[in-house]
Length: 355
Ligand code: PMP
Image 1 (spheres, helix red, strand yellow):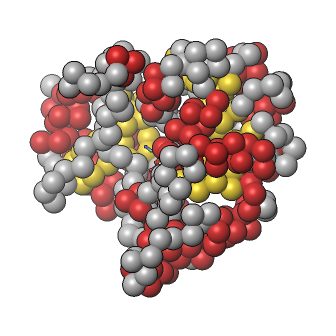
Image 2 (cartoon, rainbow, N blue to C red):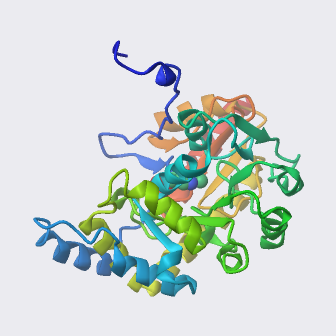
């Protein structure tokens, strides 16, 4: 830390992203990416955009905004495009959070929410999960604060039905409700349909998971025109050309390829259900998740040790050392072949641990 850093940032604890190994040869099940490459259409559009990289892009990202609006039955004024959905979340906090206006979040959720709270000087207000690891909708109905949660929730994968989301949004028009739907395409239901009815709802989406474009950094927020104009006020005071031409082109190509999207998400769901059943056969406790990952634990071995033993066999999973999550590993769903290898290796480790 230099002597110039402002005091308010001295205790800031940045988000720690999952490991990206520098060498190959690993089965990478740690950062919830897609195991499948981007769509061929995304590749074509991306390469066409390359020839125009000498020019700035449309700062409104109008073409992609229109395509996303069409897909979700909204108007272009309801869409904000961002450099990954992390940036959409950052803009939401910058626009609406400060010391008097915290966001309430589930105690176990996406690790970036407390970082954004700290960055914007807001208190970190959290509500515990229910005993089955699901988000406690009633706590969010009652709170007077702005609300943010991931649905399916991060780290657990549990899904809150849209009726419960509606109860939360409808409880007070005086607060923002931000629903982070990074993992919605793997079998959960989106709350986007509520946007026309509730101007205080923001739904956040990403091309990083179900559209196989994590490295492209393409995210979006969908909301009422008033909220989107607030968020644009922040965006155009920060970096008006987000997102860039190449990323926008790739996203347009991916969005045009619904067939590939359906095929990839179906394959992930199938591999997830295989993994769930096999992990249960091995006496793992598996949280009831609908995302492209599963949170699981064994009575025989702690999560951190299990992660290390899998790593020694070239399989990378995610482990969080907080007290709640420490017994678990979070396993991204890869291809069926990758998951078969994971189960085989897991079975051997557990056999050894049982002795
Ligand atoms: N929300 C949640 C719940 C996530 O897990 C992630 C990915 N780690 C993000 C948002 C951010 O994704 P991206 O910035 O790649 O769109």
